[in-house]
Length: 378
Ligand code: SAH
Ligand code: SF4
Image (cartoon, rainbow, N blue to C red; front, side):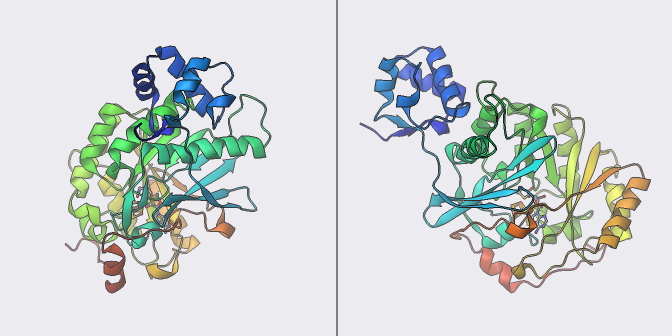
């Protein structure tokens, strides 16, 4: 017999095809899918209303293989961080952020990240490998059912109402694994999340933004961090490949199919690097359309979460407020992200997990001093 199939690797179409291959009807796959994702079943024996013949066929051929949990940390504000073992000396992190009206899970897409943003702890670690669909979904599957148990939710009530692909990794550089995972999140037989409550965050992989719009449009966040190409080239190296004009044009195209009528731009506030009033003015000029690319958007300012190797500092509260005011006065909806889970290092950009770097990103970062590029200088 061939390898044991992990059923977490399939969206409903994939699972149906698999079951058909075993000579089973499509509705059986739906039943099985609901057992896995809605009830959190770990083995076939517990699936009491599933035909015995199917259970027997699955035994030995297939399994529901989650990820080993290395640690679980719960912050004083309820934020919870898990470290999952993905083998080969790699581990990824997942964070649950409870709020009054929702529960958000921040999910990882890769062990490490090849983009290498200067202010990001994952970026500093380099890149090991893409996660599979099953490894992406295992984070949600585990967290949802673990939280239901811990919070003692009544049957049918969900712990996780929103998913953001903002953990470790660049989701649009792991596209083929991402799409089936998103489909399971959206599926009514899976997690039943609306497209507006699933957010892909990208550093700006332009061609894949176009494909996401076609294949599975969900809410989109774009990590901007700089208003000019000269500065963005330094902070987000991918900008050298897809500069701001192309990125803005891709954002506009994305909105034609997006479930929301705006793009969220993320902007990490770095003291003395990208946080002056001039930067705010340049940012306004950018999103209000140099030329034809006016992009309907909201701005989310993220106070930088420092980590030792970055050599960067968080902008002062006054600077962040001043920056926000320039944008707000010009009519741009601007929010400042609250930092959660401070006591367990669960904030944006602090997810480090454990990564066996197969690139030379880590090394390169150590050699380069932190660049401070004057505005407008190319
Ligand atoms: N690779 C994707 C998604 C993961 S990063 C992306 O870059 O969009 C999620 C968000 O956290 C991004 O906006 C990223 O820029 C931000 N971030 C990274 N490091 C950070 C740090 N040290 N402090 C604050 N935000 C950070
Ligand atoms: Fe990768 Fe996103 Fe971190 Fe940049 S910010 S290094 S794209 S995970």
